Amino acid sequence: MARGEQLGRQWQIIQRLISANRGISAQALAEALDCHPRTVYRDLEALQLGGFPLTTERIDGKHLWSILETVRRQPPIPFNLTELMALYFSRDMLKALKNTVIYESLESLFAKIKATVSPQTLAFLEKVEESLQVAPEPYKDYGQFRDILATVNDAVFNRRHVEIAYGAMNRGKITRRRVAPYKIWYYDGTFYIIGHCRLRDAVRIFAVDRIAEIESTDEAFEIPEGFDLESFMAGSFGVFVGKPEAVRIRFAPEVAGYIREKTWHASQQIEEKPDGAIDLLARVAVTDEFKFWVLKWGAAATVLEPESLKEAVAREAAAMVANYGVQ
Image 1 (cartoon, rainbow, N blue to C red):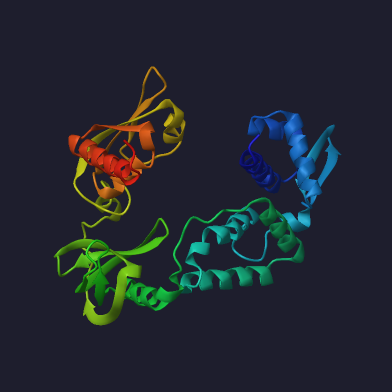
Image 2 (cartoon, rainbow, N blue to C red):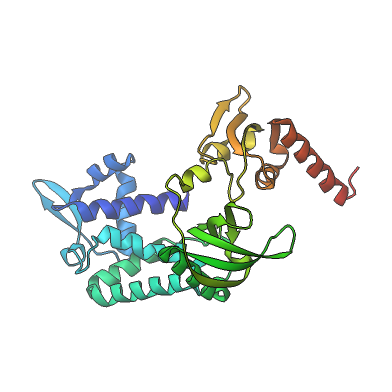
């Protein structure tokens, strides 16, 4: 059994015990979690051995499990215990924001929570924390950009233009632009500004770490009434936007399961093939970002359409072969 599956089940057991006013039987837990009662008993025993304050008593001929009332009781803050647990766990997920004002504010919030909850609740949360850890994805150190992020955040909130010196990744040339920042967007470990660029007279996406200089202005702006971030990003497969095209990628049986288990794009459809392969169909902007996503699956992915993407992937694969001198 996968460790993640066991942790997920134990997390659900804790949630159900918290919400059960009079306790709950192992049989009822097993039915709710669609597993054998012996599995539930093993999980309950493991939680007890781990220090979780579980108790059991016989009521109306049944052994009912519950969490000690001193821990279950609503803490003196506007969260129930389950919400508090989720918030507590979020620290690992937010480590990518370390050294920024955002993360420091979150740390301050956690410090206030620790000072407010009872010692029993705090001990309980720390025990739960030991059972689940979120591995951070690759991220950038945004400590050096904290002043830029603070300026952008203030400009977004107050609807004020900013002047930026921006270095595009593909050209390396610094250009000065006046931007109306509509949104701060965090995606795949990077902060972006989405807003209207006066230089291009269009909505553009700017990576915060490529801003060399920034200066706030007194010039106000209003976000156009018809602008919607989801609609703006609808055709993108990540950061880069463009005109959506119909794509069809065939994935070999050995990776088909990985493709099925995620929603890669809102427009995607999956077609099953007799040999276990699948076709992924979607309408996306065929950018380098999408091309590299296809390439990461190696020979297990074959582009069927559009022809332009098929040719681009073939050229990239040929260049890769040439790099290694393989005939």
